[in-house]
Length: 225
Image (cartoon, rainbow, N blue to C red; front, side):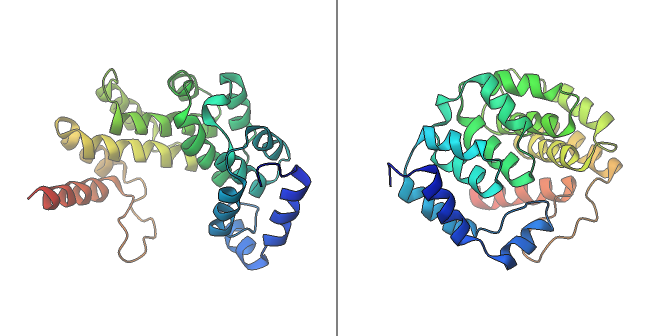
């Protein structure tokens, strides 16, 4: 399907639309009804297709945008193009997939991380924190971890939901990956109580940072013990 047209792909997405899937997704702010396993199967058939990815993103349709993140070439986007795409992402899933599947693999990721962290739009700032969490885990050299904890301590409690979630993830990652900051990360979590009461399914780890940090550290110890 390397030569598939936009109309053909949009017709396939329309055929995959399921009202029950849409109903579940809409509870989480995502306006699409396509099963993600089927969406990934379609992406596999389409293979990498940068021009189609740009066309899919331009439709403003959430399922099409999710597909776009799976068939694009992340390194082919310009910095300003990615910035504009993020600001137009609208739904949480399109935002998350754009950050995780595209921006994180882009040569512009670090420049965008720094710009987005300071952005007044909380959704854009959340993307900056998501990229920061990635660096905390994989490339922490050069990051001011104590300074990040200062910002989290001062701002996370009053942050809007999606920004708060991203900051909390960064807090937990610092505590999990960096033993020298673990006690402070846990202390911040215990004092701010952010996501303490988040409904967590059985066999899942709570996103409440002190529980999350201690559980991941325990698992790592069990693996290495």
